[in-house]
Length: 437
Ligand SMILES: Cc1ncc(COP(=O)(O)O)c(C=O)c1O
Image (cartoon, rainbow, N blue to C red; front, side, top):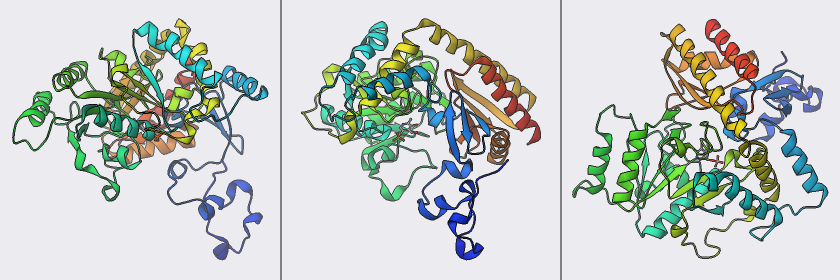
């Protein structure tokens, strides 16, 4: 295997950059900011990608169980979506249109309503945000404060909502939090399900938000991931979510679900909240909503809280039409066909069975498995063990990410479109890595 590695600069080696083979060059070390991160864990030079696989410049194939942090739920370059995009480009379809009306956006809105919202009896308006998840979070927080006239929001332990100042302020996830940039005065963190290990966590939350003298006020909103992604694949229980939802109704506070990572089928249903039988006031979506890895981010709003004035949350790239074209095609190719959702159930069962076997086989290494659908967390007893397994997986052609406050959880995010054989192949590589590590 030829590994792309960061070599010392030319002063130390006596080599000009051009003397070095492309995949061995220090271009990134020399020219890209030190802020880069994934490329440090996965030292490779990617050439192309198709389906469940990415290929490096030497032709080595990697099974991708990271999927662009769940922004590629339908795998890489799905052919039907590519065809729709190429057709649109060939017709000189407009590329970016701010929030002008375009046929690409009209079609997306119509099909999203027909394929996703109507069958689930959901009545939401769609707000197009600047194209990152963090921007949807910023919009949701602004709107909640405007609608309720209240200043504070409640967020939860081990949450992650993005890196812009507002989104980071509601993120407690320790690895990501940088206190210097935050304005946390308006955020109250409370325990996510299971965080304290106490039975009456919701009663604690209720007391903090309602009893005089707690120091907390009644919040504008609760914002939460129902399956915490970066925080360690923590799956909330249905009773906890329903009790929190009831509390939000009692307090007239908005219930905002961040479905940026857990949405678009990742949990086995289109929305994560379908498992919990609650209807959020605001849903934040991004990552896989475009279907093709293109930037796109939306809010779904209960129409009664859509109190924005025109232009109050503007942004140049809210109208990137290529995203709308592939997003629409993903709805038609996958969600308009009952077979697709059925297969997700079978795939998540396969993962559950195999991971349970893995846990039973390595009880000294693996503390527990957290899973909902096709997002699975293997919580190791030590971060070192998790990282050793991750490294072995990578060397043997499987890309998996680590997460959690102490990086001790390996998170599997396989493509929803992966075949059973590909899932089994990935699990075999994982098992072999466990054995070696
Ligand atoms: C749950 C959740 N919310 C928000 C975000 C932020 O999205 P973005 O990185 O596109 O700003 C992420 C990104 O990983 C996420 O996982």
